[in-house]
Length: 460
Image (tube, rainbow, N blue to C red; front, side, top):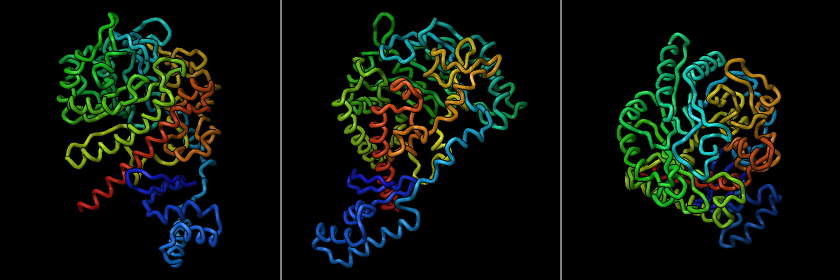
């Protein structure tokens, strides 16, 4: 399978199964489009009509070059990966590498679009005790096999509402990692309301990454991200975020925003974040029911598509000015990236990654928490729902019929199981609205990576 498109002044051809990318002229672009649909003679005759100024010999040479690329396995490469699907998870042998610790099922903001029901996950407000968190870390160590690097995300609700337990759990993990031959890497996601000097010092000492929730422009952010009195949070959190980021000294962080029906022109929010001094950015489309007032309409999505293109152009412009910034969804390594096993097997939710509730129940990921049929067990007694865990182990890009003819399947690995479930009722379904946006993001990310490589060569 190949995917062809024109963007940023480039004619781009992606060979889906080899990952080879080609930037070609108009003749080669059209030749590739005809190659498998026509005989050699038919293709050359058609191209001669489209390019009357070219000699037949030049068209024939172009055709032969395309044929050579096919013979080299760089065009029209067959998909031979399906037999491997599932092997990656089988090979892991039940090893768990990451936990999302829900240290607080409560929040000090009352965001209308919150997937977690303002942090309560459709249940009662609760915070995780140190004893539960300690057992969760022991569970992770015990089930991590020979894997050395372990990931722990402190999540909520708002995890800083249980900050002392976060600190105590990090201290416990540090006390056991040497003897356990493990290395813990921590991430904290926060709305920023409770950030102070103690939080900043701690995060910059212990957190490998910090995710900061900011939706961009003040009027956009304050539409949804309000406290329980209905007051916006933008003015209170932005100075705290700026102070935290400045103190991190280049260590990883992300400004993570959400765009909805009310701000499909999200590039303006990106520009606002840049003006505030933030350069590690992510803006995510809202995921909600189609009849939700926040849901993106068809017209919104058309605008979002244009915004993605303009975002790539802005990034190139800022590169040239010596003011680069990162956009999470455009981080693409054309020469490496995830191995093929990872590309076809998906994110690992429910197998190597799980979420832990304040009372120690285990779920495939944070987006399934509260739905009892997805409960996998608990940190005290282990996993006791093999049927559901088996569903997640078997969930890969080849188990999703809608993915088979999608050119982007080896970039998304079948997409988010939670989004698929909430959209279709099955983790093997697809969230088509999200797929549409993902494909556009990938086209823009590929174009951006190509343009950067070309710019680099020009300067060399």
